Amino acid sequence: MPDAKVPVGKGFQVPFAKRIRAEAKIKTAAVGMITDVAQADEIVIEGDADLVMIGRELLRQPYFALRAQAEIDAKPSWPVQYGYAVQPSGK
Image (cartoon, rainbow, N blue to C red; front, side):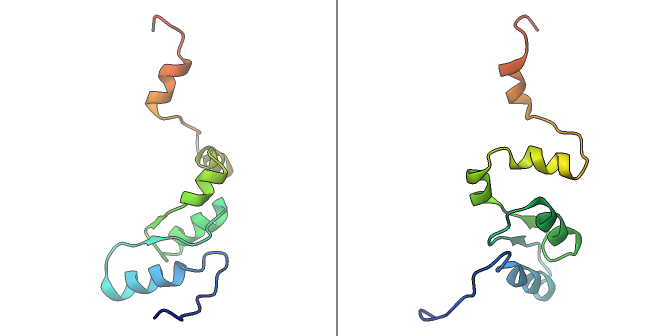
């Protein structure tokens, strides 16, 4: 529908993921202005989606995942490949 008016706001596409997940009984990912850790965590915990996609927020905040780990009290970890850049030579 080319003239559809989609209200844009925080998590505005999450209801679509929730409905598809419920009706089609398939795994879904939620997108659409998901910008903070608590919001992303709640979407998955509440069962609105199985996965949260945060592409634009990662462009704005490249360390979003590390901040998220700290906010939910998970032990921060780096991808193995990053360790090669910070390991002392000879290891």
